[in-house]
Structures are given as structure tokens and as C-alpha cells.
Length: 81
Image: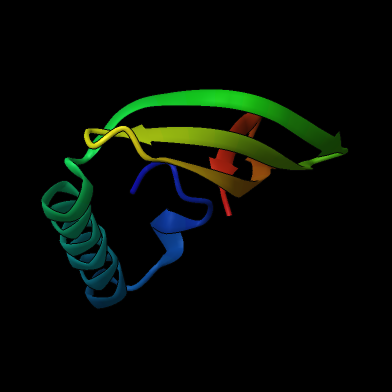
């Protein structure tokens, strides 16, 4: 959760919900596709304090998925938006 922008200002109940949702997603992907085994950065677009990072995720069953990850600079660190 520390890699998510403004996580510190989230109410505890919401933060706990987010942790549970991520854990459920990871468990589902592990069951469906063997979980992620590699991540490769394809490209990025940076405009000031916002960016989009494009990743390719390879799963245990050899399937691949490309995702765009919006990012924002918070206190000098890049975090997921």
C-alpha cells in the first residue's frame, strides 16, 4: 500500500479493504494463470508530475498481459495513482 499515492490519508477501513482486494486478486491470478512470474517495463510517458508506465506481465502459464499504470510524483517519489 505504501506504493499508492495518498495512502497515508486513506481511512483505515478503506485501506484494509484495498489490502483485502489486492490479496484476493493475487490469489485468483495465481489459481487461474499461475501468478505473475516476470514483469517488463515497455515504455513510459512523463508529463511533469504525472506519468503512464506500460508493463508486460508474464504469468506462470506463459500468458502475457500488457497494462498501463498511471503514476504521480508525491514528495519526490513516483507512486501508483
